Length: 402
Image 1 (cartoon, rainbow, N blue to C red):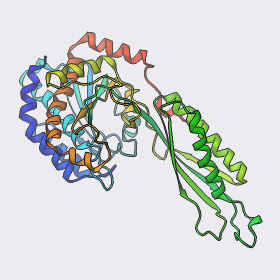
Image 2: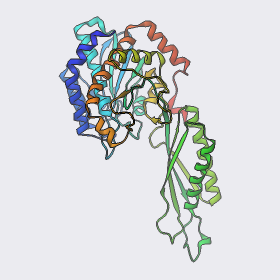
Image 3: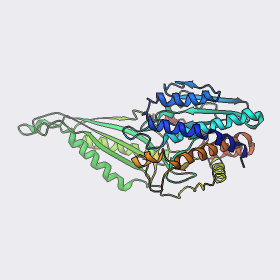
Image 4: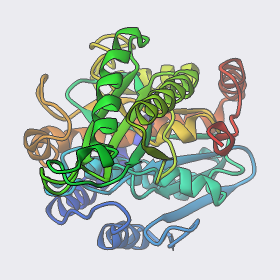
């Protein structure tokens, strides 16, 4: 049981729900979360905690910490919103729970100095939506020296673990030769033909894909006028997989299909991967997630095991890039009725609902409890490290797709 955490979480709850609602009412998109980060820093300051702003190479990243010696655990907070639809992924709740867990532990350490051994870090991590903010932070040392990193994500179910797919993006540009489509078509090389062949080839490839792998694409540019054979055409695509090896394999097949399409149409090919770094599948640390389940049970929640909802409902997150560097968890916390999908207006509404307010308290408590267990329990820490090494150990992420 974690009774010392119940009181600080309860006393912080009004400020945490106010933070969640303020972020929800004033959404900011990736890399532009200036007011959101400032609101978090102001709440920390009110609790006597200074925060570094613009850290690790990102203007809207934030870092605060306390403690010394022993192990170090980071609690992560996201706060970017989606363009046009606001907090339809509930990052306002992620921020409030992460900040709440950090401050609950800080209050406990203030009142009982020996209660929180080691060091606790709060990392505000911008630009998850459509980008890979955590990878940028990682390359600037944000996760160096950490022994674990934890966060949660709101959802329509309480899940201890779920599938999160790795993701890469690409733009494939075909360049041919323009010609009059009626009087001298034989002088042209049709770039749109290549884009069409490529798009069709991806569709045919899907029959041989491993279940769980995904490729989705659009023809972003197909020419300017029907009377002109298109000189240029472009296809934008996402590749996703639940395994790093799958992400590599599908990426290679996509490249082969693109080259084949260019060859058939007699045009040139430019394939540009990852305008922002790839995001990797999440590697869940089993001993840490077991402690999450216990802590949620203390709040009257049942965190369901992996596979309790269809694995086909998988999305992507840049926390995967953290989870292959240090042990981590990314459980899901219910703030909406079952069947409410992420990235919808219904989920945006849920992120400012009474259910979300309750989840802020339960999530903050759960993250704080997991962090406290990890810092206090040497046997747990050893099991966490053993599970991480058995799952493949630390990955050199920049080298994966170099």
